[in-house]
Image (cartoon, rainbow, N blue to C red; front, side, top):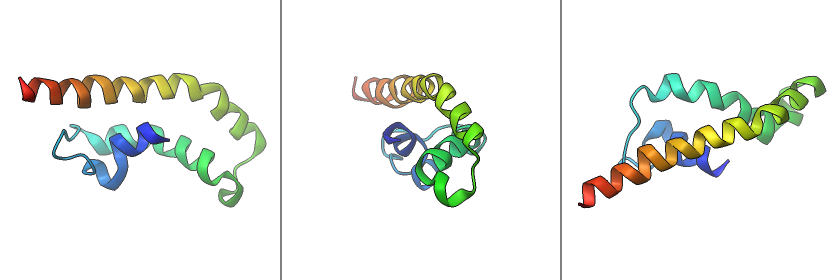
Length: 82
């Protein structure tokens, strides 16, 4: 959830001083459904099989988001400081 917020909150501009993703909207859609299911499943009418499927995919998606944070945010900031 925290990685999602770092990468995509406020349309990708929350950390605009550090970095803004290219093609942010296209990349965001892939993860926004997972976030919605995890954060709001009870109120979104999500079925139990869909929640289970999301849980199975969660580790891979978490690693993908952490890669984005590391390589596109942290590393880009380090390059700017050099």
